[in-house]
Image (tube, rainbow, N blue to C red):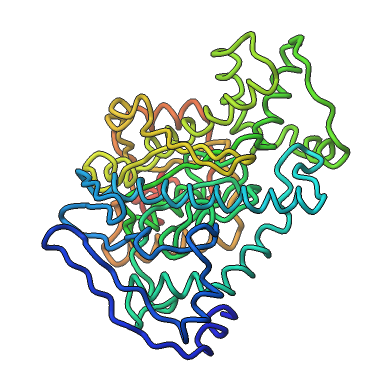
Length: 425
């Protein structure tokens, strides 16, 4: 808001954008800001990491040729073009990060923090201040959407990202793109279970915005994954040198031990040890962070019918990416190595509550019973029954049950209780 207010207070002569498609995307006029001296002072020069060439980004989804305006590359489909654009944006972010680090060194600062990560505590504030000065966000908005565009006119996002909530940088900064071009789901450990809010958020995004690409972004030196690796090393009694934590990290790991979150990440640590039995601690953590990306993609494709169907019919491409917290670079990992096999395991769409599910609050349970009975009394019940899915029946019988309510009724009642409340047995 403050960025927009500052920029709109400047007098600017807006020129219309021209886009020629006859021989590809040939030219694009840039919006003129105030006077030439303001433009030269605020926008910088091509050597400046903050310099923004308006032809560097192109997000007009729907171009039948899928042509990158900067290089002239023609891509076979929309997803390829989007991933290419995000990688080019990440290159600009890496250049900016290198410049920022060099300034810290020149000023006698320390590049690394106590835990060995890049010390970027002031990164968000610094980059925001600089972006306000150069008018970067507003310029992109006007170039892409015209002068009438802006943050109050949302556009279809290019991609949906799932990343760790403890990662220091916003996804739009990492990929050097307009904040509206990405939808981001942040969750600790960039992981999810079969029926949690992460999958629900992804399904909602697919239904409302239909982004063509879903990227699970893992990051190096992830605290939660490294804690899982430490736990596995200790449980197996392996002779692997583990670095000593700072006090703050030690307390964090102690709180994480035995948690449901750590249990979700432990399989990735076991996978890393199985693939690299003689590896060092740092090698195992790096591999486990990458394996956790594949684990999350597996859960998404095998637990959600909507995600699986979108990946199968090609409207959604699910890929992994790996963010190096030291260099700022992103490596695209591509689709899951077993993608073709995973999409054949289409989930049924039915959800059953097993003993592992969390209890439902009393108010929510009462609401479920009330609404179910309303459906039954209005002749719209009976559609919420278990299918003959063998996997679901096995899950229900072997996983135990955790019902939302206990109902006492007459044994001689003509209708089963679950039908009266339109609930699964």
